[in-house]
Length: 127
Image (cartoon, helix red, strand yellow):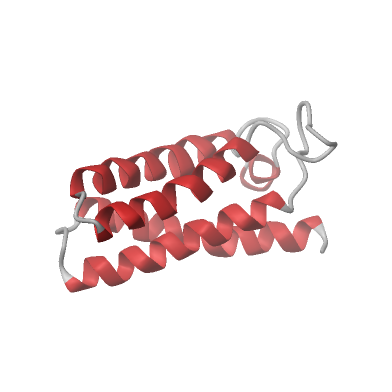
């Protein structure tokens, strides 16, 4: 699969995840709509993390000529989403809440800010 196709797939999952995640962060918790949108958000985040694993690092050092530092966020998402889901199913709302805030901040805000750095594709597109 070409890098540009993977890029468009990634954007098609991460942009709605950002919108949903922002809404969920500030909306009422525990409602049926929160639960439904939360599941969609988790699936979008898992999808985007899996997609990025097929995208090779374009900047900096790469492990196995493929994985860069930014891939650490993908692995963190693949760990955090199932744990947050299990936590809420087991009634551990505090762990779920902390996991979801960490997912939003780390997986969307921090990782997203790195994609705006010089030499990155998104930086080239936007600036």
